[in-house]
Image (cartoon, rainbow, N blue to C red; front, side, top):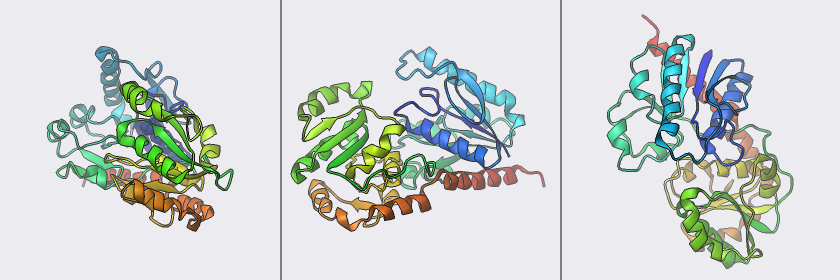
Length: 345
C-alpha cells in the first residue's frame, strides 16, 4: 500500500526529547515500513525515518511565535500533499483541522488522527464545518466533546516492542515523567511522595507557557532530596529511570487524550498510579498494570499495594496490548476500509 504520513512541523520525527504526536507518527511510520508498505513522510528536514522523507521545513522550530513563519509551512505542506495525492492509496494526517478544506475536494482517501484536547470552546466551531471528514480518536474518551463527527474508530497508541525494556526490578523512588504543568498533576505527585515518605524524581519538560507555574509553584517544592528535578530525558535514559522506580505517578487533572508515558512505564515493567481522568481507564488495568485512584489519599493507599503487581506481568501486558505493530495493524484496517469505500462499483 502507498501511504502518506503527514506530521506536525514543530518537532522533528521523532523528537529529540518531548513530543508525543511526533513520536507516535515515527513509530507508526516505521511499523508500516517494516510491514512492507511504501510510506512517504511529510515532516521537518531534520527528521529520521526509514520512509521516503519529504522535508517541508528545514528543521523543527519548537518555540517559534511568528504567525507567518509557523503557518506558511503548513500551507505549503498541504499544497505539496495535494499535488502528489494521486500517487498514494491513502493520506494520513496528524495536523488537526488544517487539511480539511483542501483534502475534502480531492479524490484520494484521507483520514486525520486527532491528538490534542477537544473540550475547548473553539473546537466545535471549526470541526462542525466538516462533519463528514474521517477522523480517528486516540481513546474513546477523547472523542466525547465531538459526538457528531465522522469517527472511523479509535486507535490506541503503541510503541516499538524493544524500544524500552526493564533494566531493574524496581527501586526506592517514585517517577514523574513528561511535562510540568498544572493539568499534569505535578503538585499532587509531590504530595503523594511526601505522604508516603518515598522520594520523587521528576524527569519533565518545562514549556515556555508553564515557566511561571514552575518558578512560583513547583520549584519551591523541590529540595533535591525528597523531591528531585532531573529535567527532560530522552529514550536512552527512560528505561533506567522507569525500571528503577517503584511506580510512576500520573495524577492528571485534565481529560488526557492518551498519555504515552503510561505505556512507556509499562514497557519497563513499572506500574502506574493514576487518577481516572481522560484515557486512563482505557490504558491502565486496575490491579494488573497499576492502580486507578480518586485522589492523594487513594494514591497513598495504593502505594502500599505495589508488591501485589508483579513487574514481569506489567511488561507482559505491554507486549500484548501496546506495541506499534498492533497500532499499525489497527490503522491498516481503517485505510483498507476507506479505500474500499472509494472503489468504483
